[in-house]
Image (cartoon, rainbow, N blue to C red):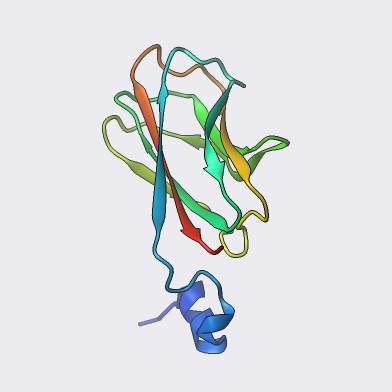
Length: 139
């Protein structure tokens, strides 16, 4: 039977642990609630500030209804897809977590305001869209 090591395991066997800033740090989250009101495709939802050293590693999305064909891109002003492009959410009343795949060494060097840009279709007309920003504090 074949074995495949995670990137973190492989790196841990080749790199002293103190050389990788995020190892052993707890995963924290910021919870952001947006009242949905038929926000159109290309609208911006401002979530929260990521302070210097707060390294985003994933996003949890919870909605009382499916978002249909609407997509959510996570980023900052000037780079709307810095952390993720065009995520869909088709499960109502359950958190779906999307991990940022290139999460090593992405902690901002100054405060960034995290935004979501809607795409393809409008959001539902009502309900609270809850987004949890999962991060490690490497500051």
